[in-house]
Image (cartoon, rainbow, N blue to C red; front, side):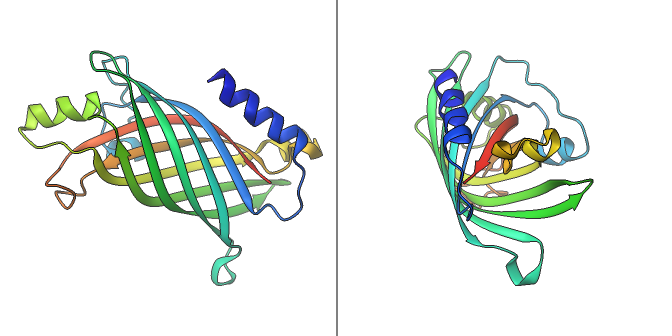
Length: 200
């Protein structure tokens, strides 16, 4: 995690581009016992097991102001490292399309993000295994991926121009079988995460 933060801070200080075609995000999160709908209504439900994730994502801006709306569209990919409790730690690769709805007020920018894509883990995640075992359902390393986020521009908040387009936020990192569409999996996993993201 220290390496990811150092890389992020270095990019924030050294890279000052005007077109902001690229993005880099690093973050940390904890597993949730709640399902996606419960988290969206405020029940974050920390998991009883000690399960966490570190991640690094990179993206490329596909479309700014999509259909003349305040929506930016990115193609993104990422790697994550899951710290498990009883199981061996494992890695994840994701690829996804993310939409950001931009809201400007009080001299700042707030973004609501929604992403849809694919996730592959080297091993079955512990939280997914125990949920599937309880419900007598299958598990899969290959699942659907969602990323739902809310963030704000840190640079504009502190009025420091080198930090403009540096976002601090919260995201739900969600893997699921979409009610059995992916390998017959009906469950999945949710992680509550916090992150820093830089556009450059």
